[in-house]
Length: 107
Image: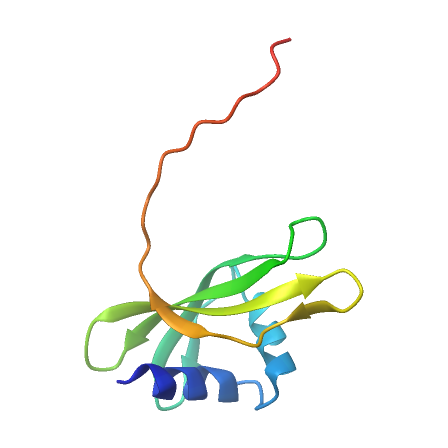
């Protein structure tokens, strides 16, 4: 299935307005949802909001009725005066595990 069709079907689950994408943020950590015409969709992660800069997105795991499991992300931005907006792009992604080093205060 093409990227545009996946975006359309996920986007239509709650409505057709760009603000309807926000409903998906409430689905993080909940049960999977059967999206008509697509398959089983699970919100696997989300990022963004107050105090986290302007980066703002939701990541989906899609189990197609026929075919492999694929991952997608709807991107947007966050602005303190306006809140979060999902205005795209919608893109196919893959989970990649990374190791990071952080520096903590010695007590």
